[in-house]
Amino acid sequence: MKFQKICVIGLGYIGLPTASTFAAHGVDVLGVDINSDIIEALNKGEIHIHEPGLREDVKKAVNSGNFKAAAQPEEADAFIIAVPTPFQENKFGQYNGITYKLADMRAVVSAAESILPFLRKGNLVILESTSPPRTTVDLIAPLLARSGLEAGRDFHLAYSPERVLPGQILRELIENARVIGGVTPESAEAGKELYSIFVQGQIIKTDATTAEMVKLMENTYRDVNIAVANEFSRLADKFGVDVWEAISIANLHPRVKILDPGPGVGGHCISVDPWFFVEAAPELTPLIYHSRQVNDSQPHFVVETVKRALGSLDGKKIAALGLAYKPDVDDLRESPANEVVRILQEQGAQVMAWEPFKPDADMPGIDMASSLEDAIKDADAIMLMVKHTVFSQLNPAEIVKKTKARIAIDTVNGWNSEAWKESGFQLFHLGDNKSPAANRKA
Ligand code: SAJ
Image (cartoon, rainbow, N blue to C red; front, side, top):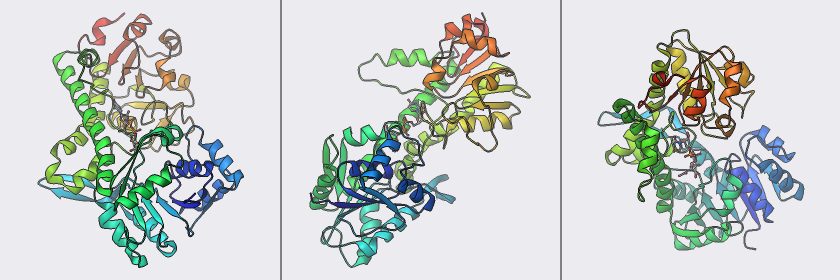
């Protein structure tokens, strides 16, 4: 095999599963991270993130001797950079009255710099981190040229984005189609050869900037489509319509597939990546920019619905069910549910949150319940924020016995109106103003 040893730089949600999957396929993998606690834990076969199946895979990889973690790269046949590209904290761009966020590329730059002493002729370098268009050719290639070697001539350089869904990473890494964008066709071919070690989906070769755009386009497409769904929820509310009914009817059209409205868009991908386009070309991206604004402001629309359900928020006790950024994951970062809780509190409500996927989470400024019962017992209203399967399966006939609340607010269409009504609740759905729950009181 051509790739006997590889270095994976960045051992987070993408780098670690990628490293363990290569190791499981017989490659000698050195994982590199700046966090010494992570290195120490991994070398003992312990992991710091939650992803189904990953613990077992990493343990096996360490025990087989194919995987070890270290603070610095070593010479290898290929280097994969999988470090985060967050926003800059205190710096923003301005264009024609709009303010936009800027990518913080420092982790990518220092990962690429860490390779410099070990880069050899014939190597392959792959950037996986989501990056603004032209990063590979305009930032990485010139940086790596400081080694004295030229990308595309002396070594191969390619961009290959990860496109796996949190919660299903290990399966999707293997089964998803993979795009490899080379700075030359030979670089793309070398990338294809590397990922062919475990990828069973189609591997598509292209140029580096196309591959960067593909990744950003996928997540931007989703963000814009969720924004239109969220805007429909506001329109439905204004016109006395149930948005969920309207969407389900519209989606019977063979060429229409409207996504789900909800409390907003969270996570580290869909709410982030569209900004890379806005930053790169603010004059060309009004739709992308405004979609971000719509999704970021959706928590305010949720709070308006809660206010209507409760009359006023002042002193009202609300049980908030779910803080994760989406159903059935334990990731609470960048979650719109947290933003909803924050605004409710600002407006005088007392919120108690329950997150079954992270019962011990310490969320600054948020009162966390120790159980569902604890969250709902003294509440004036119960609010569904994330469609976790365990919440969709709640039986309102049982819930009503454990709470003094008789108002329920469903922001994700996870609860059946009839069942909750029959059990004595007034149920309000986000984006449903057709027959306000107050009028359908049991
Ligand atoms: N959401 C809605 N309505 C919907 C669908 C999602 O409000 O109809 C919300 C979710 O609740 C969540 C957010 O959007 O807050 C994002 O969730 P998601 O499941 O759409 O996506 P992520 O962020 O978990 O993962 C995405 C995936 N990209 C696409 O589906 C195009 C994944 O394949 C990527 O690998 C990942 O981003 C990434 O790392 O970029």
